[in-house]
Amino acid sequence: MGKLKFVRQTRDTITEVALHMDRLVAEKPTDPRSATQLHLISVFGGDQEVGAVAAAIADEQRFHISLPGGAEFFGYLGEKPVVYRASLQIPGRKRPVRHLAAVSQTLFETTLGADGQARRTVLFDGAPDFVMLRLAVRFGLPVLPEWAEWFCADLGRRGLVEPLLGLNCSPVAVKGTKLRMLRILSSGIKRKLISVQPEPSALNSSST
Image (cartoon, rainbow, N blue to C red; front, side):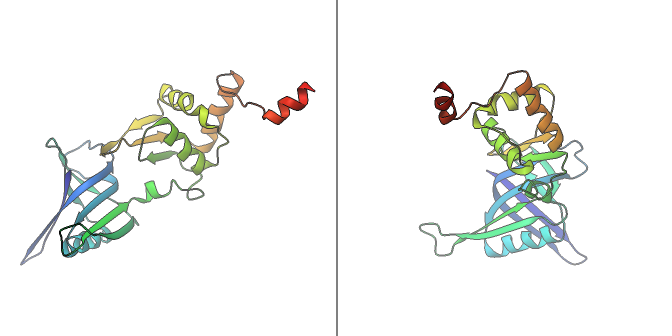
């Protein structure tokens, strides 16, 4: 479990809010003096704390992130993040726990048709099945499930997969446009590293 802290100082007061964090996707920090891009945060706490963090996200404020093991850095979600809020009823508690998940525009735009000209795709998980599925959905790629291991291995061989910083997940960023992904698939088919198997009905009709 990590922590997300927000501090705002005015002339007369200092507001400090801290929430527990169970998920994080972020670019790897390169300079401790500057804030890094956050792509996903999932936090929970009380009404006032979650409300304050939601307002800070809308104002494009930066947050202090603390991870298990002692790593600390500052991060921000950038322009127009997508925020989801919910309540969690915990047995033994009179009041529900408030939950907030915020997604950067970069991560949100991996949905179908959101940004078909993208050159980089941020993904929550680096598992081959998940990577191929999300790229296929984003770019409308013609793929088969059995291609996943080869496809991700080929992306890695080409240096197109970049590990990101994650808490309770294994995020990656995949570099490449739709055209490049199609060329990789086409190359695999031409070299007979992957193939499209004919339908059983087609095999039966050809044998007769």
